[in-house]
Length: 199
Image (cartoon, rainbow, N blue to C red; front, side, top):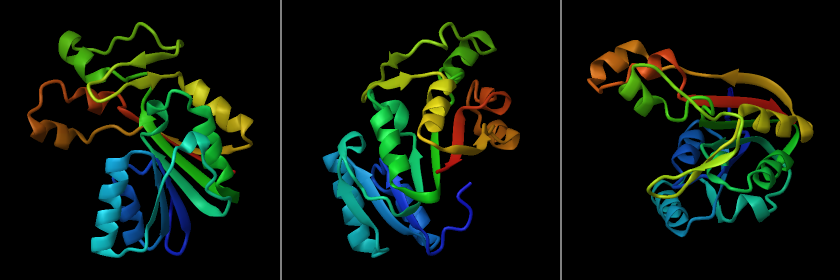
């Protein structure tokens, strides 16, 4: 969805330990990463010191920071569902783009968040609540369910034009070779949702 990134200025919004920043820098992009967690930023900076890819990391909260407005693209991988008050974070991402810039974000598909466990239990996917917004508890911190319309309507309200939406499935050969019970659910239904929009 990003296309050719060589020579383009890219913001990795919620970059974590910097794995996506390093991948895009290796493809020739000029990267800036933003991440609030101490340990993640420390690791990302250690890797930058070792690899010297020219990535700049800022420790900041996407809901309360100003990163400028001169990026050709912003990527936000699996971040928005982890933020309770997510709209200011999306606003930061969009405002960081120059006019015509591309915003690409990914999340667990809101319709299939409990896909693997319910498939193993029932041999199919079942969902009881989709339209409500609610917290999904996890061992290391919660995620937050929101219907797809919440994200797309916010994009529209921020003046973005949807350019592509992907719901990738798992390669059947990979699923078959894995030997993991219930993994075929990811062949038939999408685990992830990836959205691209232009400012």
